[in-house]
Image 1 (cartoon, rainbow, N blue to C red):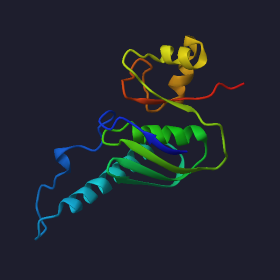
Image 2 (image 1 turned 180 degrees about the vertical axis):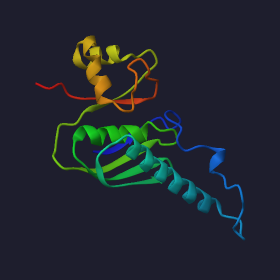
Image 3 (image 1 turned 60 degrees about the vertical axis):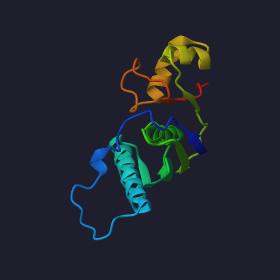
Image 4 (image 1 turned 30 degrees about the vertical axis):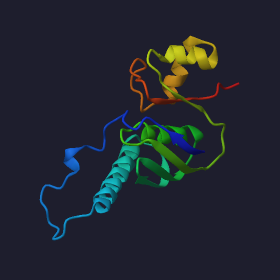
Length: 167
């Protein structure tokens, strides 16, 4: 699928903040800025893997690498929908500005459209724009579970998947 852009400071806050700083200094030498950044990126990658696993996606050999706000995803998933949901779950996380999707599919399927929520948007408004029918908003809601838990709780900067309508 390729690279996807996200609003880096929007989304779920799973990386912490001051909690990431070591409480007891064990090293003899002062860590370099690069050492600290690499450690933070490894922690971020580990937390992203845990988050995706917690969401219940079936994925083989899943790994994440984070480098300067870019999350690179590797592994094998069973469906296009799960692949896109994983990309969205990772990309809609504070601190991630781009997702490099290198996930493999077991069976090729049509891709969904990604849509970035704007102020004043509702799922009905988005459904009207993409499907020509506001009452089709449940399709978008279902396509974004488990990241969305309530169809009324979307926020500007959030990226949603808009699946193609089945014939």
